[in-house]
Image (cartoon, rainbow, N blue to C red):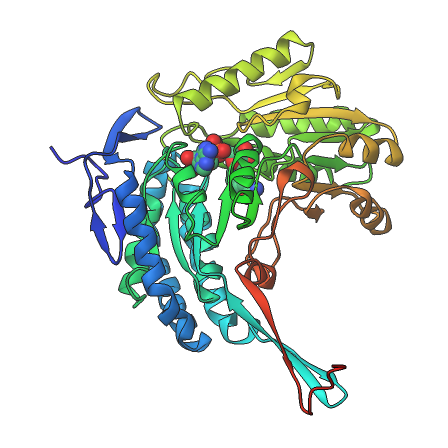
Length: 489
Ligand code: NAD
């Protein structure tokens, strides 16, 4: 029997689907029902070798093409992704359980934006410079790194496959991408589209696998760079392994970001921002503002409106366009989130709404209610650890200096947000909050034009914008002597 979302084979290497049944079985499960929708195999060492060898073979010719010609192919891929948005969004919903209402506006389309942006700037974003030296001179070139490895998380499988692939390819690299074992399907569709757009074979390869497969890529001597999207513990392991052969690394890791709401803020906007920053993608977003600091004067009104709007969220079948909140990606993630909710209750936080499993959905799905805790204090586990689910912690504060200090009192530094009508204060506060990406009077918007990434334990390197091109290339400096060499001997 063919399963609902069974791809032609597990891996996409050198322009074609490849299978190796010797690899351990990866079951792709639709999180809304628990149904197995595809069965794939993790890459064996032979598959890893095949993918890296294909990338290595293809890369020099690609790097030698003009950036405009490379960009043209990437822009064509962007158009194809947009044309197939519905089909790709349905696949993304099957892969992740995220509601189609979201995937249709946020997943393939943000991948298309990435190919369009990097396709467009490839020609202008890779220029070097001329350095006059009084007779002699030097110039710099921006050159690709070679074979780059991308390793993805499960919350935005198609977006991550594109956010890593687009700048890598624009800069003249080849990529081997390994999606999360929880969401193996989307990246294969992206690889197919890239090749249909005219990408020469071998430049974008997808191999399946888990935490056993990742190290085979990270330790491989022919790999020049690793870009990981994942948790902090995985980031530490991958960075340590990459350091063994001094590979370039980009680390897009987890967070526990502060979202600060001052008492002069537009309360409805702040509530909307906090909900987007906690419940979108069922809370499975790395940059979420999961510590919502609300100034004491507006706490009661903020919680009243937040509770009413949270209880009105439509939970249910992700394929139904009116559904606003789907299941967690996996049973394990559902259990993890429920155990954090229990810790919140046990440690004395006040449950405002949610706190369990919704009763309007099938027991087979991995659903959790959107949950709000108030009176959360800085020491509670739910205020310190990344939950990665629809659990919002509301904390009280009195003044600006206090909230900045408490906002920064975390090992993470991915994002932060401020809601206030006082723009001077807004800029003063974001200036002091320790994070890589910050928002004023909005939350979680990450268009391709702006750099995205973390500080502190949330990682380093940047995705999107011109900054990403720099992380997929390096400078070559050429000194040109214009006169005879003045040697002292
Ligand atoms: P994870 O760390 O468990 O896995 C991430 C990826 O790394 C998977 O593909 C996994 O197979 C692979 N992996 C695991 N161990 C490895 C190893 N030793 N060597 C090489 N690869 C290995 O993360 P997850 O559970 O898939 O995703 C959730 C985490 O990702 C959260 O912490 C979230 O905050 C983070 N995240 C960060 C961003 C960002 O851009 N900063 C975006 C999305 C998710």
